[in-house]
Amino acid sequence: MKGFMEKVVNLMKSEKMFESQGGPIIFSQVENEYGSVGKAYGGVGHSYMTWAANMAVGLDTGVPWVMCKQDDAPDPIINTCNGFYCDNFSPNKPYKPTLWTEAWSGWFTEFGGPIYQRPVQDLAFGVARFIQKGGSFFNYYMYHGGTNFGRTSGGPFITTSYDYDAPIDEYGLIRQPKYGHLKELHKAIKQCEPALVSADPVISSLGNLQQAHVYSPKSRPCAAFLSNYDPSNAAKVMFNNKHYTLPPWSISILPDCDNVVFNTANVGVQSTQVEMSVSNSKMLSWETYTEDLTTSDESSTFTATGLLEQINITRDTSDYLWYTTSVDVGSSESFLRGGESPKLFVQSSGHALHVFINGEHSGSGFGSRKHRKVTYKENINLRAGSNKITLLSVAMGLPNMGGHYEFWETGVLGPVALYGLDQGKQDLSWANWTYQVGLKGEAMNVGSSKSMSSVNWTQNSLISQNQQPLTWHKAYFDVPKGDEPLALDMNSMGKGEAWVNGQSIGRYWTTYANGDCQGCHYANTYRPLACQIGCGQPTQRWYHVPRSWLKPKNNLLVLFEELGGDPSKVSLVKRSMV
Image 1 (cartoon, rainbow, N blue to C red):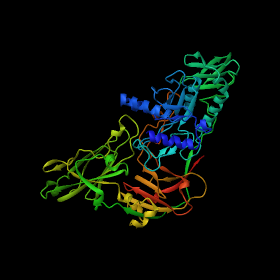
Image 2: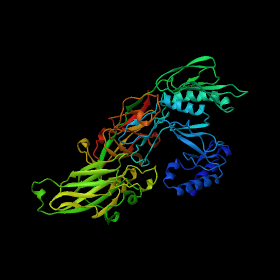
Image 3: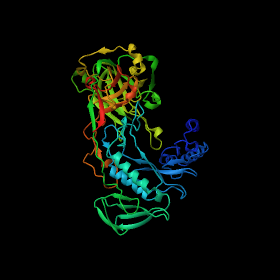
Image 4: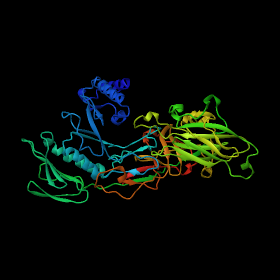
């Protein structure tokens, strides 16, 4: 940790990035929301936090250090607030400024869930509440949404899109009215600045749920914030012998204590809508390569008794881990003479599972962010003699939050059992299992154009009629004209990963979103479940392709499809705001 921090700070110092050197960085942060994690470790967690704080201060950046959501941060570290609202937050010492390091503009998206939006009226209301009570600094999370390229999305089950309903979206486009309304809010706060930095607020009641926060410095203009906390009803109030009407759940800002220049609920900015239009760029020369399940490279496999945890084996070099064992079936088994086929039961700790019997796909199971475990219980086709049972466990990102999350388990940890044989239940949990990390296509670096010659690609003009699981697909495309941001429309695919010119654009999964998309109103305390959209649609259909990754002609697209989608319908689309 110390080496990492020294490396980063020294890089910043070498470029004169800190404000103490004339640069733009005004704060440094050490750790991130460690408070809740540290509590799970008791005294050891507190000792680590204290060590990290002292170590950071010793790096001498010349600007203040902060720790967000760390109530016991030691001096001179400033503890800060993250959340949807921070107006009730106070730092742990009265001489520390009140800082809001993450004003949440929305919420992240998980595969299988809806998209969460936060109305700009409520976000502006939250910021105005914070400033009116003496807040010194606020920073949006996110102000510019982003993309989890490659296998960087965590959670697990977080989508590649980390848009967060931000004022500037994942593609760099301005989202209205959120961007414009916040811009007007900032302008109004800036007009109040002379008063805000020269006095403390005086609070007075204007009604049961209405208040005035007034900044009245002796030698500067007065500024006022008139608040209505009623989520249902507008309020008429009297302030400085003048009548004001306050919409529900809103704050009016008066930089001169007389004229309202901004109200958080009154949006005067025209809304924009996202348009994804198909480009004129065609996917050319589709070819396929299917993973071979019948043979394995013995140099890359090992055998152990029992079931092993996935991340410990893969060391995060791949999302995929193969578990293979064999079962002998006697020729006298009843099911071979017309009885019901045996049933395979697999309990996996997640996150997805594909089952193959003698090289044939038998079924799949999927977890979710809330329920990571996968249970598979289906009839399987066995034959007399030796049968190979192969389980492909798929990780959907590393855990990244919570106490002891390094001990969360992934992979097939059992029990695994066969039911329906004449002898009854056959427990396979402690059988000999052969393990192999990753896919053959990964080992050959199929996603890169440099390895094309090492793969036996097959041309297939009827690709839509040949939807095989565990299949790699490749095609070429030219860059479409214009400068609009680009994305892949993956609506026809199932689940896997995509590469453009050798760079991974991330995991894709077109699983449908479950949620409660019953509309949304800005008024009342916000929680992510309040404003959901996209129910019944793929959680994520479009996947960001940066133009900077592309060349004018012959860009290589490679897909790895786990389930058997139709790549012939994949298209490159342009994103715009209309």
